[in-house]
Length: 504
Image (cartoon, rainbow, N blue to C red; front, side):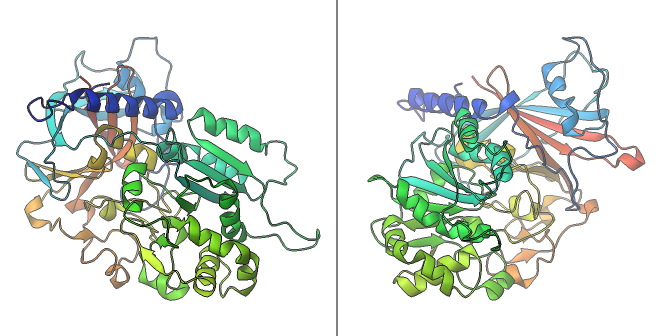
């Protein structure tokens, strides 16, 4: 796929950038089955109340229709896992990306005309609709896609259960597939007699999605059957030894993750790591976003955000790992790591902006609509729910445009990849330089990480269409589906806005 460039601005780079976009799209399109990026457990709740895609008030199945009855874009929406109402109000815009070398990611782009220009009522049970569904042209200035690179100098490690690692494949595939980086996963319950716990088969499953992964049993074993089970946190800490075992001369960084640590893209993460000297003993990471967590657990790198050790630091720690666990002041993987570094090395924590522990619960729309540039997010399928692989898939189109903001007319804001939000009282009353405190108990605990905050708006002051799914179409275009969930108990239909990013 080739996205149209502006010739006078890219006279020499056009073939190269076109090839880059083609490659990124090929990788993206082959990562997940059926073209969809939708995880099985994604939530579409608009107000942080929880819930799943398959709302109990939504249809459990739809009648089969003869092939060709529905337009392809309607057929995509008929899937019951999307949980859409039988009748929907459907809007489309055909986006033409204009790659702009002067694109300013930190400003809100102003577009004078409305985003939603037409609405068509569609019955998903019968595919009743007009023969032509309008898709008005929408040129958007965006940055170029990230260049395709390999990252075999970074090795990632995670400790988790077999089931969770199986379920985590779509998320890992988004940012690891085709990158050359290795994932080493300690399977905490690898000794289970369950025949389904086949580590080799799991490696094959990951490899089929383009991820190079090694699944191994833990180093730590119970000395006798009556001993208590060894916690995942201890396996998490001992990952350092596993990662050193596979390190090569190319290895610069060892990344220690939780199974729900998510990177929107490897490219900006690597760019940040390159700012630090991997030949020194360095410990890179981030504090919790919540000051209460820092007060309770201490000053350290919080693992859900991603922790990175230079190879020299890991080698310093390696001989002391077991005694560090015995002497640790708190029984967590992050705590073991902190105490071992402080007592066995001279390294101190180097904080990396953009790594997010996300010790937050409920509705995180304020974060994702703030113009933030996250290198990582955490807790996205537990403490709150967001379809991160679908959201971040737009990085294959325009790199740093993910969560970039565009203002339409006087009342609509697009946070690319997350939401389309309408403000009935107008955007002139909204301070877009401040993050909206939408999550549970935002308060002063988040001033140091997110502040200053602004108050949460009521549903009457803010109507949100959240990204529900994304796909690469058969023609090579890229489709985002944003949904406003109507109140089913009051007979309201869902509203769907599709942004179709065109290919040339």
